[in-house]
Image 1 (tube, rainbow, N blue to C red):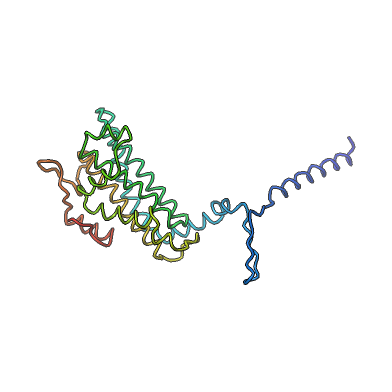
Image 2: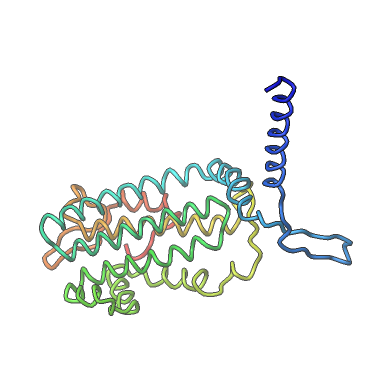
Length: 274
């Protein structure tokens, strides 16, 4: 093969590669909208989701991490304590063939994953969706509390016949603030609420606006509920309980003055009852 012929072949290969690169970088228009009054034509390309995840997403997440660094640290600390109890409780349940403990551990581990998912979604700039996810966390918590109070319903739970309203009622008995919290989640997130009725653009966090503050408050409540439930279900695994203390017929909710002060700082209010 002559030197000139080899150069021509190499040039063709480069042209072919260039052609494919050009085709792959083309963007298709998925739809378009004409605004006659503004005299503008808007194009919606078919890579909008990809761009949201890969281009805008990292910038939005970085802005959240900067603005909400303290919130993340506090949520993570409580989240970690709760997860330690979930995993220890699962190990204990398997060791003792305790189906109730195993069921509660599974429920609460999945609830913890829902919590992490809600944080991740908020971190990406979505302010409506975290509350929708957290509502499932509340049902997992209420079901765990119900089973703890009513072990005989474990069979109904395993057969998928245990009704959510029944578990919510049990959770209210154990933690009276639960009903208010559950109603708030339902009104604002699960059903069409305040945030559904306003445009929630996906953008970088530059300030602690109302929607962000609402979500951070909900996350704090959810993290606290995870821990409080874990401490009750697996109380004997806690060396120094913060909320639940053994009494003659079970456990009493009795946070110390120091714990109430911590709650005041964590929530900016103290959940009733004290």
